[in-house]
Length: 137
Image (cartoon, rainbow, N blue to C red; front, side, top):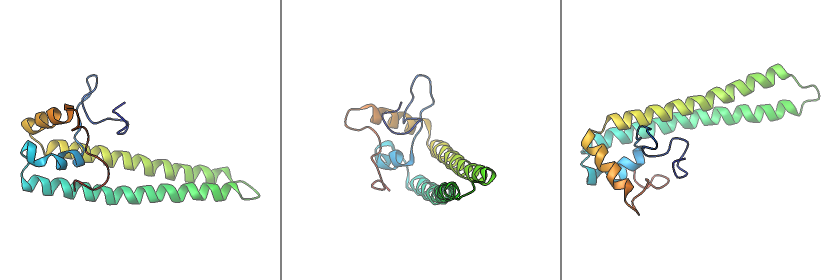
């Protein structure tokens, strides 16, 4: 769903609420009339969320590595393994919560007219999505 852009997609699909990733908003900010203060706010939100997500992903990766180490022990302690799995699972849930908050905050920074213009722009062939990486930031 969503053309390979994550589980939620980037638009309204079958009654879903349209989401506006920061990269998309920043890419088309001028075209949809987003002012400089709002652009600065969205950039700040984006980079703060990215920093936190990086920490959560690192915590999850560390826990996964610890599971691998624990599995290689002569005597496997399932309780310790379960604890590390819980840490990794919570860290990735925290990433999902941060992403959802970022999308909600980005959407809230836009007015109805700007959201409508973004919907129109991304529905045009050749204008879909926000690309990858930090190009628009």
